[in-house]
Each structure stands twice: as structure tokens, then as C-alpha cells.
Image 1 (cartoon, rainbow, N blue to C red):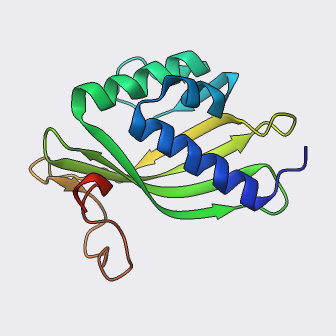
Image 2 (image 1 turned 90 degrees about the vertical axis):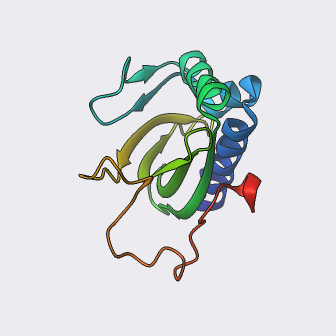
Length: 151
């Protein structure tokens, strides 16, 4: 299979849709069976290893935290099976949000996600409700200012 930038972007968007719907089978179908999702230090039980673990953990986030995600920007390589995105993780039950980036590595044979490396915009101020870059014009650049379910 030849992975095009369009294929990789569509796969990422299907994955986010599956996360937002807490759709176990669609999440499983997004990943290779041995996929790994890496996170910054401080979270329990990371990295998440295997499609089943990744699916179950995101479903837990939706059910427990009211998690919803929006994709803000997508950049896909034209020469390697890799992509990077910016996202917002809306935790609707607590009224907070976290912005960050993720690096994706795709399995060329299946077109599925083999690895995700997450990087968070971590705030030094725990009182903030949205962890994001200081003085960056999110609204002016067209970023989501609320979860899609509230728009």
C-alpha cells in the first residue's frame, strides 16, 4: 500500500471520530495490533501498548472525563509514512482543556497507525482551565474555542 498524505489525514480523522464516539471497533481498526501510544511523564500506566489497550483507555476518558477532541492542524509527510497534528482535548465534565501535538507513524502494509507520540502544552499555572500557549491568538487562527458538541 502506498500511503498518501490524504490517506494519512483521513485515517487520523477517522481515529478522532472513533475517540469522540467511544467506538471500540473503530478504534481497534485504527491501529496495528501492537501499536504504542506514548505520553509525557506523570500519567498512570503509560505508554499504552496494543490496540485494545488504547481503545479501552480512550473509551474510559469519554465515559469518565467527558472527553472530546478536536483536530486543529494536520501536516502529513509526502516522503514517509508519518504525520503530525495539533489537537485540543476537551474535558467537558471539569470544564478544562489541554492543547498539544502528536506525531503519527503508520504501518505501510496496512495503512493503520503503529505509533503515536503525544506532546502537551503544559501550563506552569495549575489554576488555568485551558493549558495552551501564552499570548497565541487561537481564535484569530481559527482554532476551536469549545468542544464540537457545544458549537
